[in-house]
Image (tube, rainbow, N blue to C red; front, top):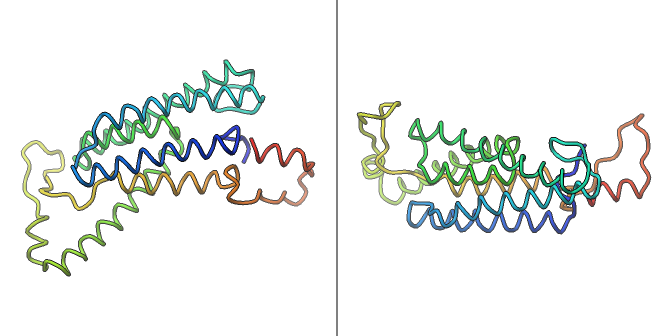
Length: 227
């Protein structure tokens, strides 16, 4: 990894644990009530901004490369973390706002993904989007198979049939949803973070240096791993 994302392994696990816990609660509430309340999305957004400001300030204090600015102390690092969170928020909002216009998700999903973007930034938002769509499709198919086996094909088709919508850009409005987006987003976020930051979280060893690359001292490798 060219630049560290977490300044410390314990900070990394705290980052992951708090984010995962809120996403799991949001998924449970959404599955039960079919709504993602603001008392979840607003704290998620605020904590994402705070975590990234602290993360940027810490990396800047360690003179580690940050996201947009060169490492030049905690103040500039904190500003970099704030900018990272804001760009991620706008990216997450834009992606799911388009899906909301197409009536592929609800307003709560837009708020949830925008708040998630404040945590992970625009780049990882794209990976989470791809992963969540894959998980959404798989879980929806499994749910359909389950309903067909338990209720029969006709009852399942009747429950999830569609009708024409007067104001829908796609012309179709689903009567029922096979699956909420919050659960796939939670699963995809955990998978993306654990994969991309597996070395920083000490889940995997650093990759060996490429042939012909200059050798690094054990102290340099250890510092890069803990950064």
